[in-house]
Length: 303
Length: 274
Ligand SMILES: Cc1cc2nc3c(=O)[nH]c(=O)nc-3n(C[C@H](O)[C@H](O)[C@H](O)COP(=O)(O)OP(=O)(O)OC[C@H]3O[C@@H](n4cnc5c(N)ncnc54)[C@H](O)[C@@H]3O)c2cc1C
Ligand SMILES: Cc1cc2nc3c(=O)[nH]c(=O)nc-3n(C[C@H](O)[C@H](O)[C@H](O)COP(=O)(O)O)c2cc1C
Ligand code: FES
Image (cartoon, rainbow over all chains, first blue to last red):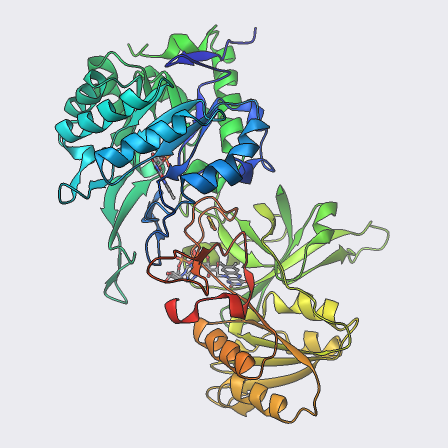
C-alpha cells in the first residue's frame, strides 16, 4: 500500500510535506537539472527586498562541525527583477512557489506584501522577520513580540494569500514570539531560521567570516530546532513548518512527530542538490514499511 | 550532473600534491577546460560540504589489461591543505566518490592562430592542462609556471609533451628562474614582434591581480579562473561571489564564481574591491 503523502497547509494543497527552504534553493530553476521539481511539495525562493541588495563582504560562509555558518547578508535581485526575470520560470512548474521577503521598516514589509500579492506565480508569502528595524534603531523584528506583530498585521492587511511567518530561534521565549504572530493574523509559522554563531581562524587570529558572526545551519542545529518546533506546535493553534538540519526522510518524520505539518530542507540541498526529492521518497518508504496510511497522521503523534 | 565515481588511481606527484583519476559517465566528455567538479570527501557529516576542484584532464581510460574496454575518466590535481583534502589523499583504487559536475563556465578558446600565454601558480595549474590540450590544436602555446619552490611546479613534462613551450620561475630559485612568474611573462610580452596574444591564468589572488594589470596595460585579452568559498556550486547559496567592475557603494555588482565563473574576463572584475 502506498501511503498518502498529500498535506494541506494554510489553504495550500501540497503533494508531499517537503518544501525547499529560502536562501538554499535559489529561485527554483537552479535545481531543475538535479531533481524533478514536480516531486517536491513546494519551494521558497531567496529572501526578497524592495531594492536589489549586494549582501555582505567576503568570506561569507565557513564550515563548522556538522554545519555551516553563513553571513550572505540577504543578497537578492530585488522585487522588480524577481517579477521580470524569475517569476516566468515559476509558471512552468506545477509546484507552489513561496516568496520569502523582508524589509527594513514595517512600511517596507507591507509594501512587499502588497506587491507580492499581485504576482500570480506566487502561491504563498513567507515573512522573514530576522532583520533589524532600521527606523527603530536596529531592534530585531524577530526578537521583539510587539514589533513582530506589527509586521504581521501590516502584511496581513495587504494580502489574501497564505501568510507564513518565519521565526528566528535567537530568542529566549519562542512561544511568545509565535503567539504574537498568530494573534496578528499569520496563517502558518515556519521555524527555525539560522542560529547566530561565530567561528575563529586561530592562525590568522581573526573571525572566519568578514561579518564576524553568521547563521548556523545544518545537522548541528537539529536538536535545537526539534525542541522549538515541539514547543510552538503544542502551544499555538497554527500549522507549523519545521526545519533545521533535516538531511533524511527520518529526520523529516521526527519533525512531524514533534508537531510539524510540513518541513523545509535547506543546507541538505548544498550537499546533495537532489536532497528534497530523496527525502520525500525516504519518508514515503518509511511510512509504507511501518504501515502508516497517511503522512498527515504523523503530525504531533509523539507518544 | 551528479554521479558516483570510482577511483582509478590516486598518488602523490610532489610533496603535498596529489593526482587522482576517476571514472566518469559518457556525458562528461563534453567538459570544457576551466570547468570544475565538487565532490564529497566523506559520506558522513564531517566534512559536511562538498569540495571544489578544477578538471585537470578528461578523456578515455584504457585499462592496462589487454582486452578490457576503455571508458571515460577525469582527473583532478589537488594540494592537501585541510581535512577534506587529507581524506582524499587516504583513498585508494576502487573507492567510490560522489561527484557533481562539470560545473561553471570554462575558458573561451580565443582566436585560432594567435599566441596563447598560460600562467599558473602552484596548484593553479590544475585547470590549465585540459585548456592547453585544446589550445595546442590551433595555436602556439606558452606556459608560465610559478611557485615557491621546485616542489610547487607540477606536471611540466605533461605540458611539454603537448608541445607547449614552458617557462618556470620559483621564488627560491630551486627550479627555473629565481623570482615571480609574472617577470617571465613580462619578458615574453616585451620581446613580441607585433604579435597578438591572449592570456589565461589561474593561481593565488596576488598573481592573478598582477597578471590582469599586465594584460590591461598592454590591452591583451586576459581570462582568469577564480576561487571562492563554495557551499552549493550551482548558484544558490551566494557564498562564492566576487565583486564585479561596476561595484560601488550604490551598485551591488557581485558575480557568482560557481555559476557565472569560475573563469572571468579580467576586465569584468572589480580587482580593487576583492
Ligand atoms: C572553483 C575552484 C576550483 C578549485 N580547484 C582546485 C584544484 O584543482 N586543486 C586544488 O588543490 N584545490 C582547488 N581548489 C581549492 C580547494 O577546493 C580547497 O583547497 C579545498 O576545498 C580545501 O578543503 P579541505 O577540507 O582540505 O580544507 P579546509 O579544512 O576546508 O580548509 C583548509 C584551509 O584552506 C582554506 N580554504 C578552504 N577552501 C578554500 C577556498 N575555496 N578558497 C580559499 N581558501 C580555502 C581554509 O580557509 C583553511 O585555511 C579550488 C577551489 C575552487 C573554488
Ligand atoms: C546560505 C543560506 C542562505 C539563507 N537565506 C535565507 C533567506 O534569504 N531567508 C530566510 O528566511 N532564510 C534563509 N536561510 C535560512 C534557511 O532557510 C533555514 O531556515 C536554515 O538554514 C535552517 O535549515 P537547514 O538546517 O535545513 O539549512 C538561509 C540559510 C542558508 C544556509
Ligand atoms: S557556491 Fe553557492 S552560489 Fe556559488
